[in-house]
Length: 370
Image (cartoon, rainbow, N blue to C red; front, side, top):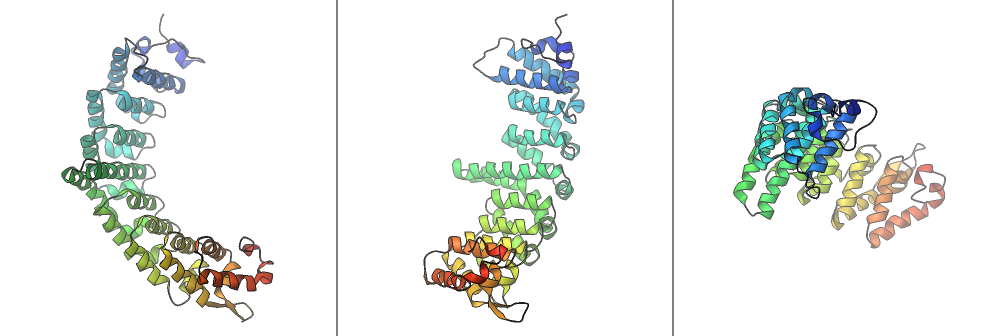
């Protein structure tokens, strides 16, 4: 027999095999590790115009036809799902449209499965823009369960990235505000549901990832709505094990007014020192110093220099020195030393540290500062 099934399911592959030789066995072979790899590599080969294989359309149609007839067997399978992804990459426009409709019909169950969610993510990357927007619209009313799911959260993250990029391209590249609005509206259900539970999601291991993608990729007016919601909960997020990452991302990608609002909460009452000595909050102080403008940096460093601490023996100590000795705050001091520009304030910072150099040399946490 000319069938290559024994080779594919056995120990080796026949290098000269075509997909026509596995007719009637595509689904079974797709679910085998080596068989799946063979089909993927053959589809990649056929898609390369340089090869110009006469049977390429016939081979592609064969795989598509057999895969679609048993699609449920493939999209939840560890190896079969890759065949559907390749068809989304290399299929004709009609094939992509048909496969996209099937994904749309089952998107809820697919998104919560380890392999199914990968097919959905590939569909978001490969389908035409209009069909992607339709696919994302299917998440309305189900956003929070998806975000809380270990697989579904990746689909929501991908949706945010892809649709936001579409909207940005329409606005900035194509100068078409009507099209940009269309994409923004398709993403609004996800934005709205996240904002309604911004505090809870920002403090959730999966939810914090979704919020970070929003901060990174969303465009106006959605971005401002997201940032406003984050800043409204900043007191609860700054020292949270997941929320602090959202907070840091807001400092990196946010507006000047966001940093100004946060800066106000840092000033007075030794807040800068207190937060710098906490494991998670210290990361936020570092980000403020790194990403703040010159005024914001100088204000924070001046606050550090103006503050004092009381050591275990009751002695008053410069806050900068106490921070240099601390397991977490020493990184804040080191960052300030790295980024503060030449100025009397920089000289003052170095002067205080040099005057306590002997003490600092004996402290393990201060070695980078010394």
